[in-house]
Structure formats: C-alpha cells, structure tokens
Image (cartoon, rainbow, N blue to C red):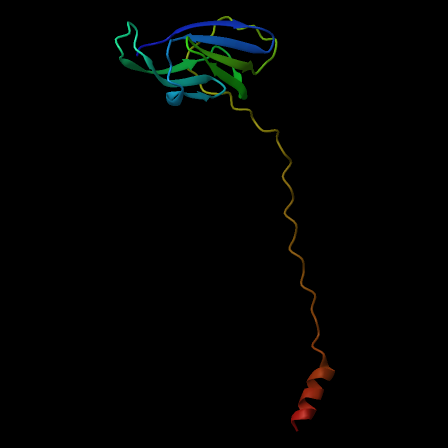
Length: 140
C-alpha cells in the first residue's frame, strides 16, 4: 500500500485533508480520530491496476489538535476527504502533519477537599419499660 498522497486546506474552523487514492473499498474503511492523530486503514485498487488490491494503513500525526467528535470523513471514487474540526478555531496550521505526540492532558481545576463529615451520633433509645412489664405480666 505505502503512504497515500495527501493535500490539505484550511479555514477558520476546519482543516480539510484529501487522501488521493482511487477505488477505496467502503466496507474496508476505518478512520479513527484522536486529538493528535488520525488512523486510516482501508483496501483500494493497487496503483497500476491489474485487478490487485492494496491495503493501506497510515497514522497521520497532526501538527495541531482537532476535536475528534466534530471531525468526519467523506468517501468518493477518487479520494477520501477528512474534515477535521480545529480544537482552537482561527488557529493557522503551518502544515497538516507534525511529530508524533500525546494529547495534551488538561489538569483538572483544584477542588478544595471536602471535610469528612463526622458520622451521625446514634441517639440512645431507652427501652420502653412499660412494654417489657406488660409482656412479663402476660406470661405470669
């Protein structure tokens, strides 16, 4: 398979990448989105024809972060178009791909520890003396 040919363009909110591979089998297409990379796996007609099928597996390490839940792809006979939602709208991407990196870990806001509430003090319940006396009187 090799590495598919890629081109890209961008606007304020999206980066659109075009994977130029003809005859991608729709049933074989798998696209996995994460904030820092896109994993592609598909079968397509091998370059040069002859009825052969090539398998493509490619991980695209992105230059900047995307919103995986707002990203999508469209397949045609001649290419695969990836529409990637920029994590930071308006940010200009210098390139589509970059060095492999892990997603940024957003540190949770510090939360003041909640004081452990003292367990409720059980209220002493005095046995009802009259009930005990009545029960004793009935036995005798």
